[in-house]
Length: 215
Image (cartoon, rainbow, N blue to C red; front, side, top):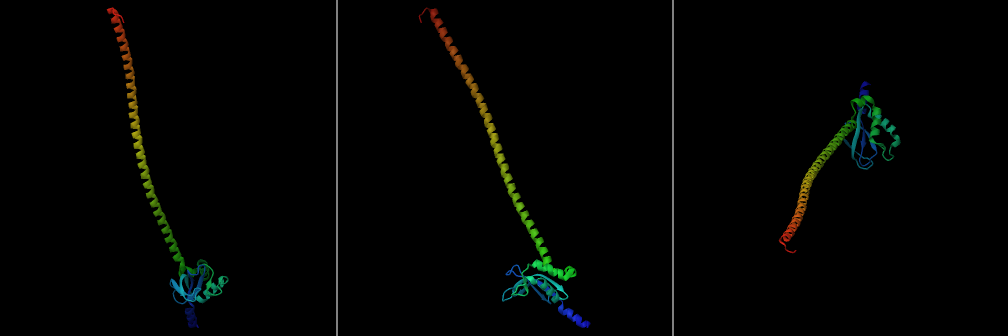
C-alpha cells in the first residue's frame, strides 16, 4: 500500500504553469507537466498550429492535476469556449490565484520564474531610467555650461564695449574742454584785436591832429 502511495505521488507530482502569447494579449493558458518547464513552450494558442508561448510562471507541486483543476475552477468565468485551457485574464491575476492555491511553503521554497524575473526586470528598468536621467542631466549640464560660457563671453564683450565707451566719453569730454578753452581764447583774441584796432585808430587820429593835417 505504501509503495502504491509513493508511486501515485511520483506520477502526480510535477509543474503547473501559466503561459502567455504575444499573438493573444490579455489571455493566458494553464497547463501541467511532469517535466521541468523552461522559458518557452510550443502550444496551440488559439491557432491550429503550436506557437511559441512564454512561460510566465511555473511551480512544482505534489499533485499537479489537483492544483490545475482548482485553478481552472477559479478562472471558470473567464474561460474561452473554443479553447478550454485558455482564459481571458492577465498573467499577474492568474499567478496570484495559483500562489494562493499552492500556499506559502511552495511559494517560499519552490516557486521560480515570473516573480523573480519581474523583480529583476523592474530593477533593470529602474537602473536604465536612472542612467537615462543621469545622461540627460549630464547633457543638460554640458549645455548649461556652454550657455554659461557664452554668457560670460557676452559679459566680457559688453564690459569691453562699456570700457571703450567710457574711454571715448572721457576723450570726448577732454576734447570738449579743449574746444571750450580754444573758443575762450579766440574770444579774448578777437577782443584784444578790436581793442588794439581802436587804440590804433585813436592814436592815428591824434597824430594827425597833432601834425595839423586835416582828416
